[in-house]
Length: 56
Image 1: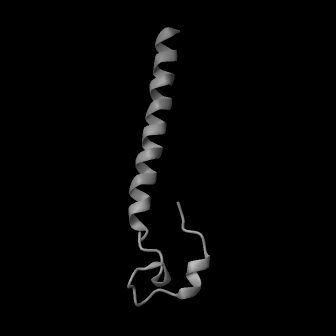
Image 2: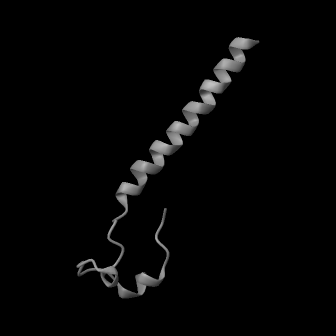
Protein backbone atom coordinates (compact mmCIF):
# COMPACT_ATOMS: atom_id res chain seq x y z
CA UNK A 1 0.00 0.00 0.00
CA UNK A 2 2.83 2.38 0.86
CA UNK A 3 4.52 1.62 -2.45
CA UNK A 4 1.35 2.65 -4.30
CA UNK A 5 1.14 5.92 -2.40
CA UNK A 6 4.78 6.73 -3.14
CA UNK A 7 4.27 5.85 -6.80
CA UNK A 8 1.20 8.09 -6.97
CA UNK A 9 3.08 10.99 -5.34
CA UNK A 10 5.98 10.61 -7.78
CA UNK A 11 3.56 10.45 -10.72
CA UNK A 12 1.77 13.63 -9.61
CA UNK A 13 5.11 15.42 -9.16
CA UNK A 14 6.23 14.30 -12.61
CA UNK A 15 3.01 15.63 -14.12
CA UNK A 16 3.53 19.03 -12.52
CA UNK A 17 7.14 19.18 -13.71
CA UNK A 18 6.09 18.09 -17.20
CA UNK A 19 3.36 20.72 -17.32
CA UNK A 20 5.83 23.42 -16.26
CA UNK A 21 8.35 22.35 -18.91
CA UNK A 22 5.63 22.28 -21.57
CA UNK A 23 4.58 25.84 -20.69
CA UNK A 24 8.20 27.01 -20.74
CA UNK A 25 8.93 25.60 -24.18
CA UNK A 26 5.57 26.62 -25.60
CA UNK A 27 6.04 30.23 -24.49
CA UNK A 28 9.35 30.44 -26.37
CA UNK A 29 7.49 29.96 -29.66
CA UNK A 30 5.53 33.17 -29.09
CA UNK A 31 7.42 36.33 -29.91
CA UNK A 32 8.43 38.24 -26.82
CA UNK A 33 8.14 41.45 -28.77
CA UNK A 34 4.36 41.84 -28.86
CA UNK A 35 3.70 44.46 -31.51
CA UNK A 36 5.33 47.49 -33.09
CA UNK A 37 3.51 50.00 -30.87
CA UNK A 38 5.10 48.46 -27.76
CA UNK A 39 8.55 49.69 -28.71
CA UNK A 40 9.60 46.81 -30.94
CA UNK A 41 10.59 47.53 -34.53
CA UNK A 42 8.70 44.71 -36.19
CA UNK A 43 7.53 45.93 -39.57
CA UNK A 44 5.02 43.11 -40.04
CA UNK A 45 3.17 43.79 -36.78
CA UNK A 46 -0.40 44.97 -36.89
CA UNK A 47 -0.98 47.97 -34.58
CA UNK A 48 -4.48 46.66 -33.84
CA UNK A 49 -2.87 43.65 -32.14
CA UNK A 50 -1.64 45.96 -29.37
CA UNK A 51 -5.08 45.99 -27.77
CA UNK A 52 -5.19 42.19 -27.55
CA UNK A 53 -3.80 40.45 -24.46
CA UNK A 54 -0.61 38.46 -24.91
CA UNK A 55 -0.92 34.67 -24.57
CA UNK A 56 0.67 33.15 -21.46
